[in-house]
Length: 320
Ligand code: ATR
Image 1: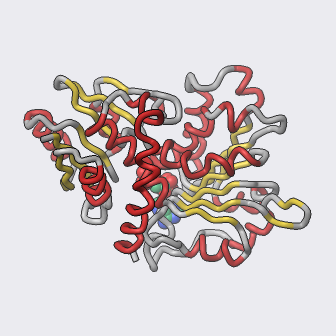
Image 2: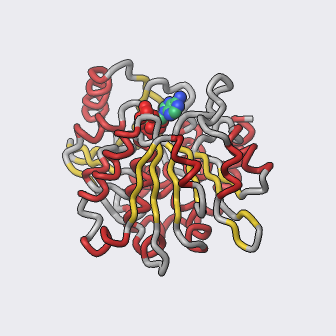
């Protein structure tokens, strides 16, 4: 039997066990996938040692251990948008155990990319990311690396990171400029901007994509964005119609206040359910199907596309 797990704290909220167990059945794989709570860093590392000793195939990592997982990995795998993981991204969400070695992947960007692929292709590229934590880092690095979709446009693309703590947004931008993703030529064209939430009023003009990666909206006590949402009306407008897209990576609730307000303004919205499912699909491939993930799109995407609507409906019922 092939064994895998997800480690985090808290872990009760995690939908990963439901998702992986659904696919284990559909792909007819003799496997198991369990949630494991690790109270602190020490316990996280002890758990990893136990999984290695017990012959696990690998594990997913969720809040707050993605950075620590990065630190303890022996190797990192970066395969374009499927596992987008330049070493300076510094956050692993999937770890494969191979001959006692820990091999890190970050499949978050694939999850994101899979749900925005066509819309992103359709417009000039002016993107705002709210937040500068682990999820923001994977999306920002991923977008910066999407030469074909993001940078090969005739217009000047702008990627803006706004965060409560502006220094963290600045560090993220510096890391992208410093990373081996960006060539000198790209750096000249690529406009990366950092700021805090007050800067949104100026930055929103002409923006065609805004992505919330903060936890604002996950709970009723913390539901209001720290700026006047009406400013979204100043996003990209074509022939009098505002066509900016609004993405919230939160999937519980399925519709945050941010998305509800955006919908009232007739903006196009996405929640985080697609990202959740597709980042997990690549991890499932790594643990249970074929650790050579270069084959993922050719060999397994069709099957996932067929069965995922049922999974999506199941998750929606669970989340409510
Ligand atoms: P994840 O891995 O999900 O991205 P994270 O690394 O803890 O989680 O990042 C959370 C992000 O949300 C951070 O950018 C954080 O801002 P700070 O860098 O200023 O801490 C942001 N965040 C968390 N709670 C927030 C709140 N109540 N208001 C605004 N931003 C918040």
